[in-house]
Length: 311
Image (cartoon, rainbow, N blue to C red; front, side, top):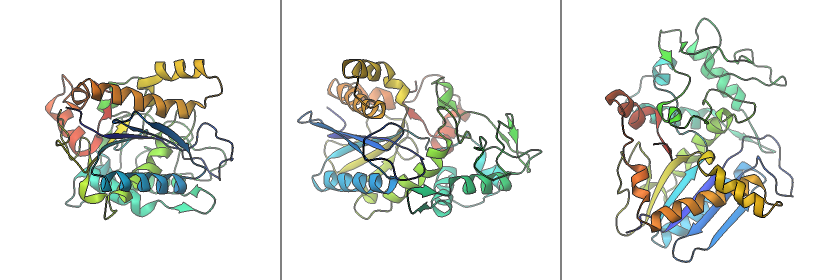
C-alpha cells in the first residue's frame, strides 16, 4: 500500500532581495504531485514569505481533504551532534527541538526578502567561542561580522566549553556530495538556507491545522518503513538532497533546455518518490540505514536528523 497521497518538495533559497518576475534558479521553487492523478505542478516564488504562504495553503488543503502528505526540504534539519552543548543551552527539550526553537526566535524575515542570517550565525559563534571564531564560516566580503571567519576554522572545532564539533553529520557521510551545514556562502553552500529553513518548518508545525498531524522524520517517526496509516490526514516532513536525482534532473534539462534547474529538481524529486511509492519501495528508504552504531543512531534521532536518499 502506498504511504502517501501527495508529495511536495521545496527548493529553498537564502537570497537577499525580491527576485525577478522571470523564473530563475537559486530561488524558492515548490513541486507538488498527486498520486491519484499523477498531476504535477511546479511554482516559482519571488520571496521566501510568498513561498511559505503557498506551502502552508497547499498543506492545509491536503489536510482538509484527509490526505497523507510527504513534504521535503532541501536544507538541513539538524546540525552535527554536540552543538546544543557547545552553545551552553540547557533545556528539557531534545537537542533538535532546542535548535529549532532558538533559530525560530532569533531569525527574522525583513522587508524586501532580506534576513538577519549572518547576525544569527555570529551570535551562535560568539556563544560557542573557541581558540578562533566558528563553527559557522564563509563570510562574504559585504558582511561586517568579525565573528564569522571567511574560511573554515578547521574541524573538529572545539568550543569554549570543550565540546568537539565534527565538520559533517553522519547522514552527510552517506552522501559524499553534500556540503557541511556550517558553510554559509559559496558554491553549493547550505548553511544560510538551513538557518532560515528550520524556522520555516518550526512555524508550520505551530499552525493549528497542520501541527496536530505533522511529524518530522526521523526525530518523531524513528527509522521505520511504515510512517503513515491507511488513511489521513498526515504530514511527514523530511530533509532531501537534490543530488539524489541529479541524473534525472540533467535528463529533463537535456530534453527541455529552457527548463530552470531548480524547477527540474523539484519535478524530479516528485517523480522519483511517487514512483517508489507506487512500487511499494518508498518505505525502505525510511528504514534504519545499515551499519549505524548506537551513538550514530542516537544522534540521528535526537540531533542530527537524516536525509531521505542516504543509505
